[in-house]
Amino acid sequence: MAGRKDYVNSKVTSNREQIEHHVREILKLVGENVEREGLLETPARVTRMYEEIFAGYEVDPREVLGVSFDEQHEELVIVKDIVYYSQCEHHMAPFFGKVHIGYIPSGKIAGLSKLARLVEAITRRLQVQERITSQIADIMDEELKPNGVMVVVEGEHLCMCARGVKKPGSKTVTSAVRGEFRTSSALRSEFLALLKQ
Ligand SMILES: [Zn+2]
Image (cartoon, rainbow, N blue to C red; front, side):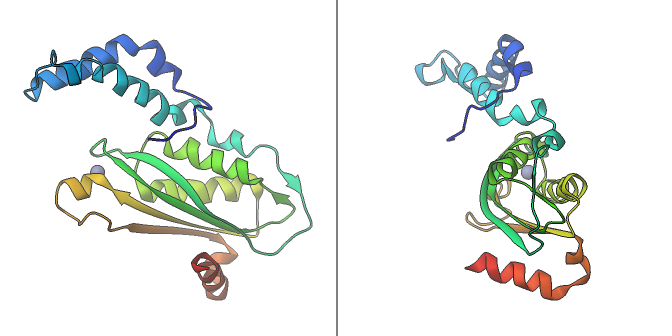
């Protein structure tokens, strides 16, 4: 995976040897020969990957949005195509896709990089797509106190593909609405129309 190394899970770092040991044990238990060349470094690689993909545990998503600009702008703001990579908590298999956020500020606006950090803090841990969607909406709602917020998350789930439940390439789409988006179908339509552009 292409990951930014802005932050890592330091618990993984300090438990590195134990995690490598257990990965090696699982490889043996599924019938692998852990001495063959291709697998020699695998436990260490898996552990380094865990440092990145579980880095969200080290970040408080609420603090990420902390500083925001005061703005008079009270029209719809849309930030779309924020790429995420997460792990399904039922199978520990990857799922990934894009997050789209629309909100109507009421004095506070979050910078683009802050929203990307929020998405990382929430997705870089064991998750389900539905909870990612509602957590982003709730934290936006509580920290920025906008007039309304809508979050749409698209995800491709490898656990479903690998187990033959769904065809590769099929996407799950989830959404959450707060504030004015709850009551105004016109607002929801405007957001969805702008996503398609
Ligand atoms: Zn799963």
